[in-house]
Image 1: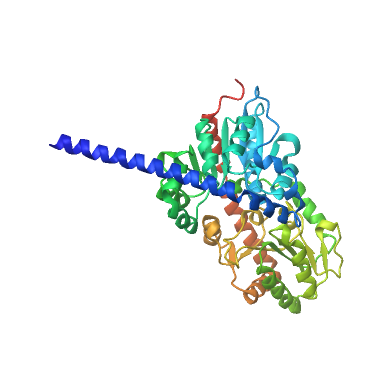
Image 2: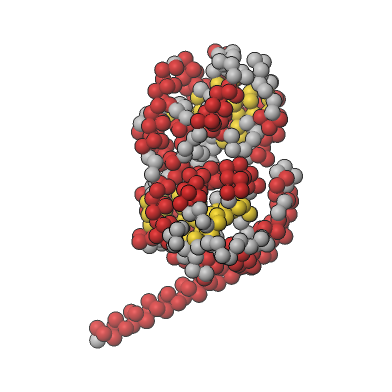
Length: 450
């Protein structure tokens, strides 16, 4: 009797599994159909965006998988990083791959032109760059056939149904590197739980930034034996001394004026920063502001915002040098944040006074700067908690509190130095994530010397 019940239970399990497989297959087909239907609008949006960022209209064929094939006799690796932030985060990992596997071709894909520029700036011809193909069967299959990677490394949280399906079909191991998953993102993914669970079975390893990130992936359906908690590769940032020197050299053009850097700001934050700066100058008339918006398509708008507020600005992209009469240096270039941080006394990191979730706090920490942030830090929970615990992160809520905190720091070189040193110690104490990634990668690849 018990044997018959066990058989019946097994049958129901098999039936349920078959139903779920059919469901996820149909959902991928539906997703693909909708993507094909939306393709003309995707292209139109790309052309529309190219009015502000010209790079969007270039190399469109790459987005359909039409790229020059890599040499089939040379083993290859493929790493994908969406845009500038992800590319910068991936730099230590890419350097490690180039050092450990010099006989492999390394393909790096991005989604944005600014990401492409960052790859070129950091690695020139040491890696090959193309744009990630659209997540459609044809483009993805063409791309994989021409790159033939031995390993696919996707930075942070890149879950694309067709991309994962076809890498899985070609038996290509997939590493979700430096993976993070906020509680908010988890709730969104849970609405399509069966589809996400299927994608997670097609990932060989999720290298999570923190135990909390890892636990959220498990709640989504990731098998625990595919989870590796590595820490954040951003902590492995190594700043060349030349970057610090270039920042100090830049600083000479406006002299010893106390300088606030507002980095990676978003819509709605510049107004808060400018109001705080206006208040600050009643107490520190010579105070100087470096303002670096997050997105290139907002550079001109932010420049007008500064001018309309009555400030004298120079634009970094035009190679204009600040003078004693300049109020604001607009950091309207890409990949220069660390250089601009090095020219500053205090750092405010944006994306944190508006519901974006914050941005990289490790870069100013690595330069020993006192760091200020808004309260919206859901994308950087672990890093922000480590800094708070070390009393190395100051939280503000509005222009008044931002002005108050900056004023306090401007008055006290000792407090600036102490905060910056504590932030640096947090950064230095949490290195090692790249080595953990590389140990996993080494188990997937043929020895580079073989």
